[in-house]
Image (cartoon, rainbow, N blue to C red):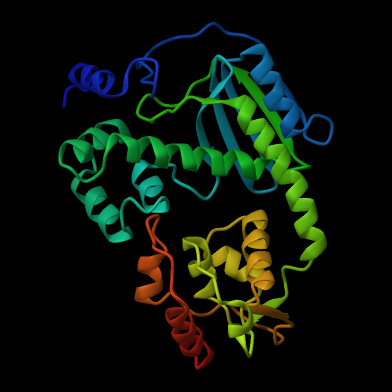
Length: 308
């Protein structure tokens, strides 16, 4: 696909003001960068500044070995990158349950020379995914990244005016007002969850009589992933790492399971290492379209895991 043809087809499908296509070689006016410490000027304040001043550029935040880069256009979030994630479309589609890991690997092998925008067009035109799947997957990845940054209280930031993501990257414009409100709400919820579940080095085990509070329970896709790793030898932190979950996500999930009477907290044995992999059935249910799970299935899974 020639660049001009690809650009025209992309604009026809997604619109020139929607998921942006930055033209290669486009130059921007040079302006002075802004840098400082997150202890003095936090993530919420930085996003408010970008939002209110309708800034265009990139905001890089760094904390020890973690680095995140957020891109903005006229005060809207359009793209994110984060250490530990390649930020590729196929990875986002796997994360949102639109593709399996096997499908993603096969697509990457066959389309090594295709960038994300051309790959999106190919997948849509061949019926693998829809335009909505692309928008939702990219949006989810971006929001997961930025919400994680609200919990950063230490580190450095650097704002570079007019810097934009590579032209091969898919961008989705997101209004920052709602993001800031949700991020602030999550901070308050995280503080409450930290009080309820302060130690992530504790382990989990299934309750001896889970029937007591399981009458109307159904497991979400995220809960299925966590359930697959519940063992006395796995700490909550290790379960989070195995499922690539943030502290907020794992605390919220485990707290819900504790309240439902499905699991209870225990101290892990010394030198415990993460073990256990999701079964084929639980992996299928961990997709974005997973149905509610009946109690009989829950009991069978609990019995199976207890015997491990």
